Amino acid sequence: MFAIIKTEFQKIKRYHILLIGLVGMVCSPLLQYLSQLIINEALRDPHYNFASLIDNTIWGNTQIFMPVLFTLTAGYLINREHTDDTLKNILTVPVSYRRFLCGKLLSVGILAVLFGIYSLIVTAVISVLAHLPDISFAVFVKALPQMAALSVCVYIVVLPVITFCSRKPGLFMTGSVVSFLAGYCVLFFKQGLLRNIYPFSAALTVIGFDTSGYAGTSEKGSMPLALLSLGAMLLLSGVLI
Image (cartoon, helix red, strand yellow):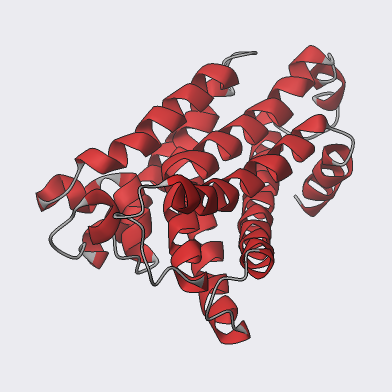
């Protein structure tokens, strides 16, 4: 498995999808900051600081950027084996397609965490350039495990979509749209059981993110139900694999 993961990272360096992912993860903190500049002054947060931008980036990553980019990246890497006609050569090696697929999915999982950390670094850079108040290393260190955990959780949520779309060449683009719509729908689950078990809401609950200012939730999510929801996503992915 280690050899498969190592090979995948060697191939990723040559693909344009890596650049797309890096640019995409810049968009989240950049758009969140720009939105504060163009928003009506009466609605603008007078205490907007480094921690605020981090929270906004976490929300933007969960709702839009991570679901789309993770699905797009994983789907592209799997799809290239079909478009480059290399899959028939790979399967002559004594490695099953299931093991080969798991290697690719684990590789993208590692890349997803790196994307999350990169997104936080970009957020810090934008904060420094914009001269936001309360910039400190302590705030960055506190947010680092939260962003890394978010990357893992969101990747688990979209994993069934990635796995299902790996069955047919070219289907990953449709999967990216599905992931985008699913992430956006986190706005509509504000309370009750659905709010606790909806996978994207569950991801935010696991990292301890307060969604009241973003989705209008009136209560904290249930950690046991959130973990159960993510566990169900992993189980479904295992069945599909």
